[in-house]
Length: 382
Image (cartoon, rainbow, N blue to C red; front, side, top):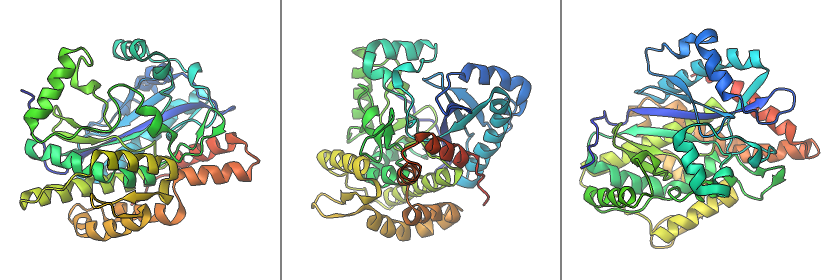
């Protein structure tokens, strides 16, 4: 039996994946191990935090990840990320590196990027071969605590219904290896090529989910539940649901926006469950189509709203959703952070800004990297 840890309702943790780039060329730089080795000397505060925030390596040697501790509010989590980023910069400046967060790097070649020398990553690479080497992608993950295991699967269903909203707002990967893909999120469609990644399945009961895990473990598809890389997944060890839909978010303001939206959606669903109401999950083929539409069209996607086949522009549905979630945001003390969603709707998502910068600079994608680096440097001040 898979134990689900005790977790306070709607506490959260944030994970911000960052790409290391050479300051002179803007190319990806596989020097994560150098960065991590210098941290004890140059930024010891990252190793001795009292709040649980820390920095770690990732699948690629060009990637580091900033991870918060357990937070009560989005502001607390974003504040931890900001402090960690400032400490990290003391190390990267010394090495002639910059860093940014976006779903993909605009022009570096995927096959040129070494994978970290860790057994779990090397095993995955051995199994997935060429497609595994394509995973030069970056995301933001949001963990939200749940106070009872019975809420986990309905919350996953609810978040799946809002998949296109979360992806459209966060889409930041229009370019791949120097080409405009025509998609708002190249990352979303790349990541689902891995055998255990992509959309979650629907389960009526926790026992059904455990049967699935047992099948995966018994047949050797995974060696550990953490290798189940769904876009939304339970994390029993932490007592959370983890939202992994989002592309890498360039700014802390964007992290605040998507963190608040996720936290509010989970809390809204939990309250519905407490009142005896369960969210109706969209049909799997609707969910799959909504994911594709958001990846292709971003904020211009027309999404399927319900199983009656009603459709609406995703930004119009977001306006309805923001009004519905406002009282919950007040209770969770994240009104200002949730308000950043409106900013993204009005000013545009990162994929739109990146395309505009490229067009204004004659297609020079180094300018896009410079923009992304500047975004990562911009503090979030509540």
